[in-house]
Image 1 (cartoon, rainbow, N blue to C red):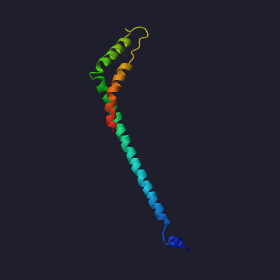
Image 2 (tube, helix red, strand yellow):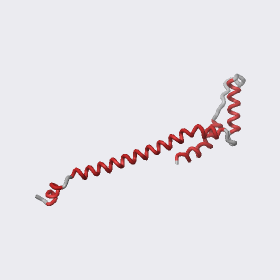
Image 3 (cartoon, rainbow, N blue to C red):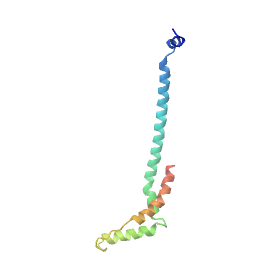
Image 4 (tube, one colour):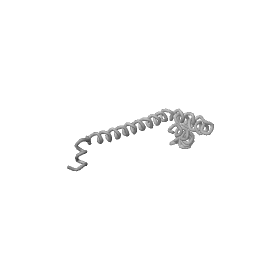
Amino acid sequence: MSLSSFFSSFLNVVHAEADQEQVESTTHQEEKAAEAEVEQVEAEAVEQHPIIREECKNAAKCAPLTRHFEHCQEKVSSGQGHKGEDCVEELMMHCVDACAAPKLFSKLK
């Protein structure tokens, strides 16, 4: 009988495996908690997204584009627009997105 097998007969190897499983379980729980925290922060930011966008629509920089777009929409929907006229909102949306992005990303930190 070798010295290592002699000690092996007294020591329970399962405890070392159980400790490793416990460490892995704890690590997994910590990772899940971190993921849950990130998801919560993202959810809060998503909830604020419409509010931030609305603020940016009315901001001094984007307000003229917003008013122009809304006037165009009213004109077209009342039938006073040109045939096939479409109110393109890309300029207004670009302004709103440029205004909202830094505010929204600051909420994610």
